[in-house]
View: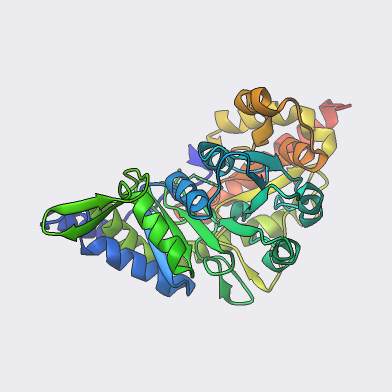
Length: 375
Ligand SMILES: *Cc1c(COP(=O)(O)O)cnc(C)c1O
């Protein structure tokens, strides 16, 4: 199966992990600090706090921003559930804003949801395409609302050469196996605010600080959200090849763009020239006459060894969220969900793989466009 995204592990990664395994500190050692420093160097952020997942980092972010019961956060429903879940963990209410046709949160929709309870806006750089952070900042600043950038897809993305990681109050990265780089599982919180970084370090490790000798104090509620040195060794090694990974995904995307430029059945999401996307995903948007055939197209592609995926079922459609907030319907998010198909795009694919996917997809789209009438 050609999966939609996956890791690339080479001998340098294996050597780095083995070396870390043989060292004295398997966790809480210097590799964690080195990995955090490397993330700061890449992004220009002042502080990085490595954690065992992006979900943990999101939870620590909401805590650091003081999100608690009855506060509201505004986010996009076109994301992985954890973006909203981590705010629910703090007892907050989640308001879902609609999305633009590129899958990113719609700033105009954010405006309509802001009220006195709004504490945080959490944007997601869908597929690696950065949100328009200036526009979101303009909306939030007059209300004193903080911004989290869930950049789980966007390590290595940039706007006008400015790296993602340094544009919001807090930026979150994921190093889950299929994200831009991997530490098996893992994530990080980046910020320029020292108090936020301190809070996140406390949340990461039981809220404890060392006083003297054996004497520790626990000064706030905390968890065990630490990332091991073995994982950070992999992260450090992977980070060296991030640029190479993105360049390969760019080449694959260029072949797709060329092949689909005059497609009658789908649209691609163009990346403007001042933006670099980490291209965690390569999403295409099927024309509405094919929406009701998407499940058949999906299944047929899978049976041919092409592991397409759909990103994302809107968070408010999950039964957990329906129980909390009732039925919701955001037309941009609904249309995006019905249209979207993520084609395989990762650094282990050959050009032949890409051509195989293009010809199979085109064949199936032609077939279903003739056979299907979606109302
Ligand atoms: C993957 C992902 C997460 C969760 O990342 P983990 O590291 O698996 O916890 C959160 N938000 C988005 C947008 C993601 O894609």
